[in-house]
Amino acid sequence: MEDALEFFSRAPTTAVADASIFLGLDLIMKDVAPLTPFTEERVAAPAATMRFEPVRGEVNPARVSLYGTHEEMEPGKFVVLATEASDMAVLGANGARVIHRRGAAGVVTDGRARDVLEIRELGLPVWCRGPRPLPYSRRLVAAERDVPVTCCGVRVAPGDIVVADADGVAVVPKDETERVRERTRIVMEIEEEFTRRFDAGESGTELVKMMRRKWE
Image 1 (cartoon, rainbow, N blue to C red):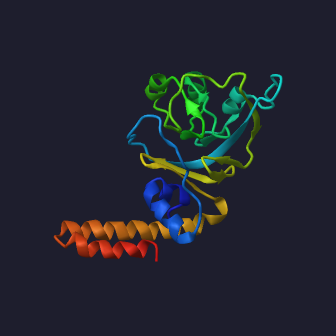
Image 2: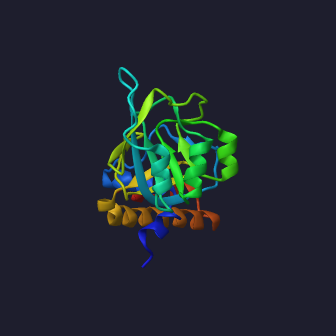
Image 3: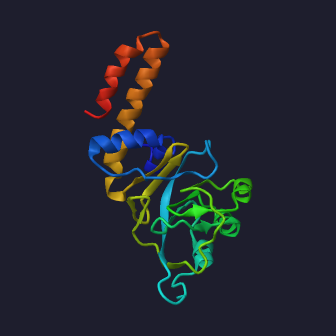
């Protein structure tokens, strides 16, 4: 049987979103988009998490080494940088170079990113709340790594499957993998049936009625 990562690497986030409605799960990140618009990347990989927190009072030292964490990361991870929706850039060219060299599948953050052209040249897929040149220095500190975090409104634990494409980012919890995969498969089959029958000449007005099966 096809394993979960293989399946979700070809599953659109739209199909995962439809499955989440049927299952009553909150799987789709809010207010996040590809740093390079209309990316052709579709990525599915296990999450590696890091949590940032605001500096309060005097500047306090980071409790986790940002670059050290990236250097120690196993290849094939999807890096999740949770910042409490900061408006500062927590990913720039240098961090992206380290992450890319470690073989990460992608990065998502509820913060922002900078050095867009350099990141694009690297070919590292990044999803964020948009570009901004202002860095997080002296405003945020890296507080924890490899812990459950909330990113863009969705809870992410290390090892959860992050699925990302041009439409956005979905998170499949480890303990819900089979349920989400099975419902996503059904959604994809319904969509494929619609396309096949529409291309064969059937009425779109009639065929659209079958789409309700995705949520019923």
